Amino acid sequence: MAAQLESVERCLEKHLPDPELREVKRILYGNEPRKLELASAAVKSASQHGFELQGYGFEAATEQLRQPRKVRVGLIQNRIPLPTETAVKEQLARKHNMVVVSPILERDELHGETLWNTAVIISNSGTVLGKSRKNHIPRVGDFNESTYYMEGNTGHRVFQTAFGRIAVNICYGRHHPLNWLLYSLNGAEIIFNPSATTGELSECMWPVEARNAAIANHCFTCAINRVGTEYFKNEFTSGDGKEAHHEFGYFYGSSYVAAPDGRQTPGLSRIQDGLLVTELDVNLCRQVSDKWNFKMTGRYEMYAEELAKAVQQDFCPNIISE
Image (cartoon, one colour):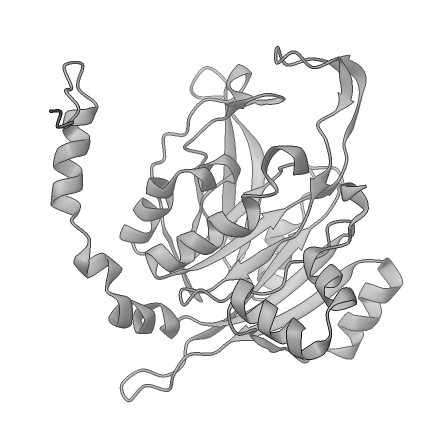
């Protein structure tokens, strides 16, 4: 069954000889980023605790005026091993000098106890830098979040961290190209996309959307998905004609990082918890922008004018007929 397939990359590696494998991977994913040499203690820990550990690095060209801006990101895909209220994030951020992006269910007690799908950003100092709420709420089968979440009202916030400017495009927001664009226009260099999505619903789109966003917006994107299944004691339906069931479906993992030049890391496993460590030279964002000029050649005034017309009640589509 598809749910048991470890990953597309492993399947290719198993069945293709090396020369063909390298060429197929180049066509599908671009030139593969270099492998990182990971600490032996980390490799041992991964083996002992049964999770996948992979590491890759994206290089940028040496510049005359700017030093390399190398940072590392870690993408974690997992089942739910700890209670979601476990309070360790602030301590870990400060202890390990890292920024933590932590998706949560937020209850807004000041505004009617509204529920938001929120990501909290914790600085490497251990303080809460801010939060970003999910802009787009799905109404798709079992993922009909409109029955409990409201559309976010924080816009397209970008957070200046010690390691670069980051943003969080939560889950379903990856299907909206303008959502990625607005984070990019606000200065994001790395956009995280924490997700929980299943194979039957979206797996054919998964390798495309975040990678396309990295290319179109001259930035790095980090696509993170959970893995495994979630069982609910009581059967449920979603008004889509399907029989009552206990599960959403299979969460297929496959987390990856995409670079602005179109390259991407191999995805993590579809069946196993994992950590993907990726070293980025953020200088690559401007280098690719200088080459392709997507933002410079974008017709934003024209888009804004036509979008302003399109949202009016008396909008008349610009269709030319005989």
